[in-house]
Image (cartoon, rainbow, N blue to C red; front, side, top):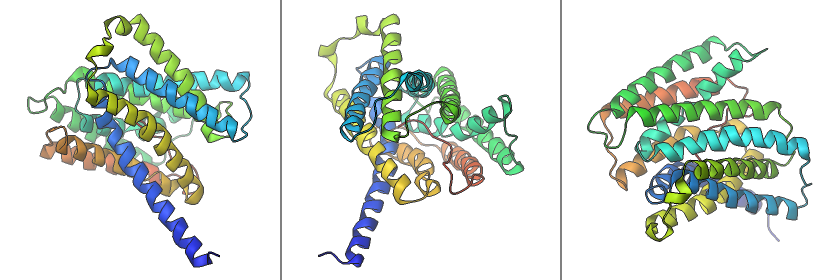
Length: 314
């Protein structure tokens, strides 16, 4: 028979393992996206990845006894999926053919800034407090510094178009996050995520079809690295990472669970430098500190017992 001390130690070990999974796995998805889109068209890659992940999560939720969603839930999930996964993650997948994975992770780290601004500008919105305004200004300064450092010749593959697409994707993710708070969604977080993945993936695959990605896609030319990265995104990025995050929301406070937002960009930059040889300049590091500092100021302004702003990129 296990003692209370043993149970406590087991629970502590699980929490540490879950934090490690969320910190490292979600931080590594940016590098995995980079390798997957090298030989798989970005919208084909993202659409197929989220479709499979969504179907698996949907089936898992149903097996666990979660009710089948009704029409209003599908409707709001479609809107949320379009904004979060199609507009948000789709932008990341497309832009990472032009922007280093570490830079992409830092640009999308500013999502909480856009969320505060959009929540203020919407009808009946909430005016940000002074600390949030300071965080917004810091984050925007860091973003400008980062984009300027990414446009130089030392940052191979980075360009203004990719950076603009990532900023637009961050705005889309922020809008989707705000909408999801007020929309009709299942009580089960797993089912809600499954619906968003399924509907968002369909939109991504439609874009792939209309843009001609399927016509240009040569399955025989897909590299082993792209296949492994795609499988990693499906299994670890979506299924394992999401399950670990849901566990942390129940085992700790949302404020503690949301600390992954500060670690993921740093993990992405480190992995991009160590594995893919992506250059990291002093200006990039300074921009990272300024951006994450602004995000921290905004996040700390939220009640520690409520959900912090959602981040993108996983």
